[in-house]
Image 1 (tube, rainbow, N blue to C red):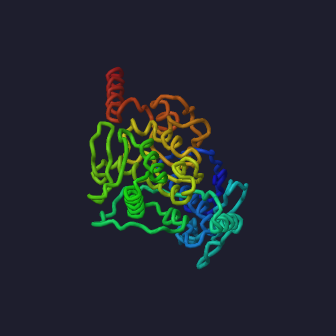
Image 2 (cartoon, helix red, strand yellow; image 1 turned 120 degrees about the vertical axis):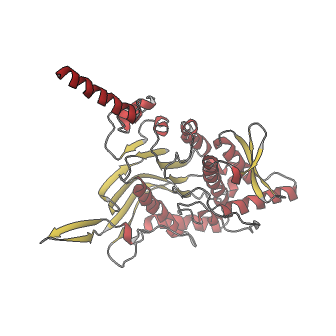
Length: 381
């Protein structure tokens, strides 16, 4: 699955716009309030249209409060009018087919119209799956800024019973992370490996994905006696995952969730499920809680670990921008004045992200300006 183009009309703050997306990574930048998260929400509506053909999965409609509004003044009074229709339209590849589809909210009290083009493809994949034939289901995930694990830890994690592969779509468009399903699956796999005394390739694939993406951490595993997820760093030290830093926990939660969903959706791929599963992953503020050193390579880590996934993300970090390749940046403030590929952090901050004189603090700039004005007064005296 891949989204090549998205058109948005009367959605959130956008009257009408169109964006072409790169096949592997697309990064949106812009000042606060320019609509970066709104675009991800629109993409969630578009990608979520696939779930219309999956029984039991929840798609993402256009909500009533997401329809754009305009203010009109007449005779000294102001009215706020909702602008219909609100439309999210996409072009892309789904199930190996080139397809166009759209979702429309036409008026007050109406429901978001369904587009059968993408739902039909999902239904066909579901029929193949139910017949027991090998089929690859695409991954769809959305990670918002609330993705840090904030849930209270359960006292005891129950194991999970075998279920449909479509369980990999459970809450996949909820921007907040839910660790419980992931940890229950992890615990079940670890116990199964211990009982059978043989490695479980699906579990090994998830662990390998985490190892490739987690800076300074060698592996994770579920400690059955202590009933919690443990992490081992590259020096051989062990620590419960709940005690990791916010940046480490945020990244661990996201990478494990992507790998876990790939394993559930496509168990027939075994340890290669994370690498061979295609899909669309949306990430708001991909630099969230990450040290600049980690920001410089986090996108490359994700590319390497999930090579068939299309990542669409937002950021305020020049270090993230610096790691991009040509054609992967969309600036909502307008085309950048300078190139960003292989440029210095100062060049990117000033010419791409519009930060004046990034090599000096605001206080220093104010002091220099004050000194300049002082000497001008002396010269005139």
